[in-house]
Length: 312
Image (cartoon, rainbow, N blue to C red; front, side, top):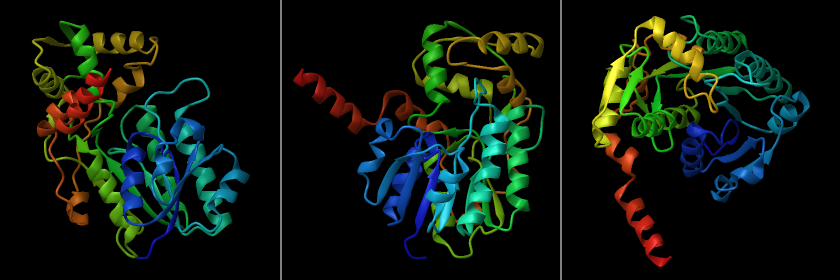
């Protein structure tokens, strides 16, 4: 397929910061809608990438920005609710607005980020992800839905968060330590989306479960991060009664390192059944070999950092 004009919502987030360069490399013309263009100018230096300040919850703004676009990619998602940012607003209401704006502007293709086990379990995160999927599937658009397990990679909220917490806590109490997941590399998720965008037929009106080759418990993941960091930590698996209390208390802390809804999400294992990567011809990367680089940085980046330090 020839180069397309693609409008991306949530393009300055973790997945978007990896996806936008990948799509730009294919020659697509990309418009990233952001709450604050000035805070995300780095992406704008890429060829054929424009960052625009926009309120994505404004219907008129969406219709205007979607005009003449070939496809829209909705990456917006939150793991914790707070203030005006509720799961219902971010996942369901926004998806309704995006679908309506696509129809009004004549955009045929919508690529929607979701989650493994969307619509299952007790958490509002999974519940609203499932509601958003239902809206997309009920539309007349040519849709593609991506359902990743927990995503890792440079700048993630998984390895970096646990590595930081482990440095501070010699004894680490862990809720839902036996929850299972299949961590998937952000580059593989980006590649999956890029391949579907580039194809006239691949992925149309389809959902793809995107999960890595290693199925690990949360306890195993935290232990691997601890070992790769060179830390000797005692990890204590909490019973659910205490894990729930921990989540409620942590949810009151700045930045919400853990919340009750996170706890409820972990009650549903994030492992897949149908290999979406295989359908797209992608061999997903395993989690464990990436840990040294995620914790210490790449050798090249380390050398650059050392060179900068030596100049000061």
